[in-house]
Amino acid sequence: MAIDKLFINARFDRGARHAIAVDKGRISALLAETERPEAREVLDLCIGHGTTRMRSHVMVDGSVGLNSLEAILRVRDEYRELIEIQLVAFPQSGILKSPGTPELLDEAIRLGADLVGGLDPASFDRDVEKHLDVVFGVAQKHGVDVDIHLHDPGMLGLFELEQIAARTRVLGMQGHVVVSHAYALGDLAADALKRIADVLATSGVAIMTNAPGARPFPPVALLRAAGVTVFSGNDNIRDSWWPYGDGDLLNRAMMVGYRSGFYVDEELRIAFDLVTAAGAKALRLAGYGLNVGARADFVTLDAEHVPEAVVAVPKGRSVYKDGRLVARDGRVLRPR
Image 1 (spheres, one colour):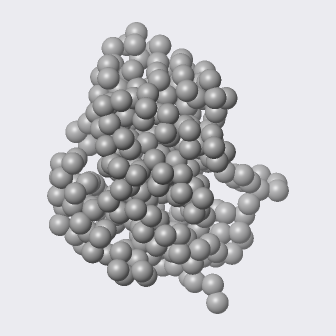
Image 2: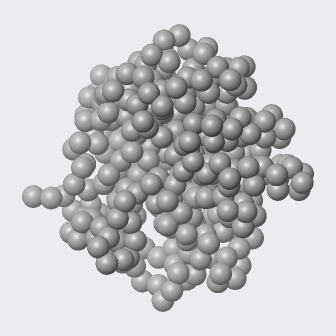
């Protein structure tokens, strides 16, 4: 999810490259507003629903430079007692085709971004190897993790997944690489799917899916059975890409379960795991879970068991961060 490109009441413009241009135009206009009210609005929304730790992608490229990242870093610091945020330096316009972006990604990590991102190395930059050279080069230089958005379908997407997995293994980065979306996994033949599932599991490459409408998406149960870490999240919240995000991960679990054909209790628990324990594993969160000695971050809600919570998506939640009540009934309670 990108909290630097959120427009809660905005007009929705569809189309990939057009959407990028729209985002750039809005970001340029908003950068003068250093307070970034949109970011605060969406953070309040997510916290109110029960999110206490988050990963967000922030646009870094030759057109916007580091301005958006600098603004979001200020907001992150302001919200540090309410939510912990991992920031991905994300090359929304590509890396090779956007002059200066490799250097900006490097500087973004120095400035405070936690991960380096990539975007469709084949279709955007037309050079998978050079694109990955930059992404993994920055990651190795700074000792940070990688999160690559991959929308390319079919055999092209399969090839890119294979190359990402190969880099991960060679560099010893198992467990430190995520591929977000990976639409190709939803439209492969059974034999090819099984092979790449085994490759991803062996390489420790995690897959994030938000079960987007009208698009193939990774087969959650099959990948998990092969040993792949699969988790879920919101793909932006009411921006020029995606008008349906609401910041509620329990609602996202319901949506993934619905689209995956999860009907029995065991399957519904898988849907819940996607937005809880599996996400914590992929993001390498320390002190997660309801265990002795873990962080006292938890949510209370009205449901008799996990399957009911997934299908009913109950509201009226109380959210605790480090043992302190930080939100109730969707309203954030700010520390005094």
